[in-house]
Amino acid sequence: MEKAFQVCVLLFNQANEYQLTAKLYDSLGYKGQAKRYAHKAEAFNESAYIVRSCLGISFSDVIEAVSAAEACPENKEN
Image (cartoon, rainbow, N blue to C red; front, side, top):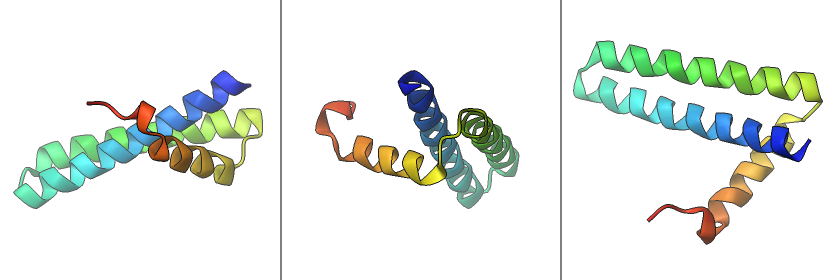
């Protein structure tokens, strides 16, 4: 169950990264790239939802874990 929870958190984080990238491309005028990344973000969000639904993980638990992961300095890349 812990691994599934970690996968859910990773999917959620990746979806957020894709959404931020889509917004960046949109602001720069690259509409095609923005649309592509928005679709990727949507797919990762749907995958996270499926994992949460199948395993009974609440959305608030995922948000709490994401917040905790962002607060841990050992998880940050150099």
